[in-house]
Image (cartoon, rainbow, N blue to C red):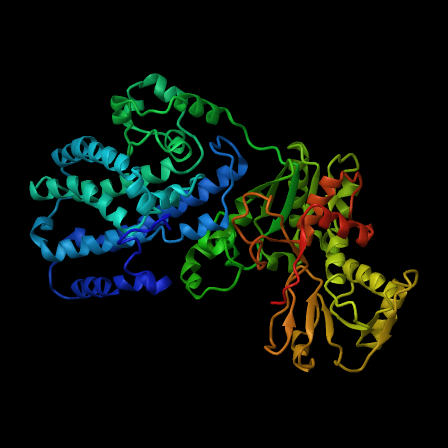
Length: 616
């Protein structure tokens, strides 16, 4: 919101929330009715809805590409990170597209004659459209924009847009309703003039809308890509088109570079920022970032591609849950799977900075189901390639997230240490911190816990730690108890056999029958020690999230949730790699190796990570 919101700040359909798109339903029904009857309509009318959908797809492509490029660092303009507050402020980026659709439908219904038999192309109309934009639209916008920076209008409207110092494509349309109405009035000048002079065409009408979207997204993408050679060959272009770095300076300096898309009026009136050329050249020379710590994760459910930072911004900023409307995305979802399998390679999804460390999250384009099917050869090849790439990029530590460290797959990462004995980078599986978080989540007064799920490296460390606190670890089946005793004979773990489900603290991992929750007593606390959360089947019980901690406020560029975790929460496996680098521990944590859990717990607290004590 603006610092002092003025009238017509809120959009008219704001109370509808995500159902705002239903306001187009009457127009869609009318379009379908016209198509199925003999009632004649012009092609322009039938193309309105496809045009709106194409504009949304076009903007989403810009969002994904921009976030990917800025995460890599190549040609990045502004180094500051995005935050959840900005994401929330810009979630209504499609309101502008929705409003355009309503206006076009209304104008067509009121003045159908101006759209009647509109040709696909008319040269004189395209030329007139270009001249009208370069003249009246750009000129009037320049002075309107300067007026919006006057204290009265800035505090009531334009400050909302400038709250985003670091821009992304959707920042372009993050404005109060009244401000957007003013912009649409300006953009309507070329459209209505060509329509009323009978020089318009389908290409000029929809082409102009595409041009506005393209240039808006281009100017706010936060990475520079205009080649210097282009301006050397055509020097006059610097007056006719802005670049991402040109407009980025307007968001960091505020009182310069006011133009819409064409800087000519900034040059005429002397408002071009003095550092424009320097910023442009500096951004072009910027290489990819060299990460200090890489967290290697993978996709989970089929819908998880939309929850990535490179996916839908509004979904990525919230814990991952199933959304009914994503079922309509199934053509793209199922098309992504074979493409990822054939052409996919690990990609950078997110970047962060913390205490002089450059952090990156890399994603292997495989889903959880691929890991569960035991595709070990192909998966290990992808993980090995990522490890070698991280090593060559100068990373000090690589942490294995989710199933990339599965015992059956690579023995908690030990396979790669044996295969690449000269590896300088340290590989961390994070088991020690995961165990430490679980142990510190158990109330101090607890005398017994109930262990369900596969007994692995993490649960062994937990059991060892609990035995030192004289806490019994109860096992349900005798044959499993015998098997466990053989594994922990040297650990002196206090294991006991139980025949009931009365324990108030359940430690749950993978491989257990989740229906057993129904046998738990009321008020039972379920604490997972696995990478994946259990299904919540009881409303009268409490559930902790998977082992995680809250990131410090100095942890920058936190604008996406890690899978199902709440905002600014990070998994133990991811934090372990960061702490490993901060402490400069010159050892691997993989295979059977596990650190002193008290040591790594206190190290994490010392670096600002805080316990996540809230049951969910």
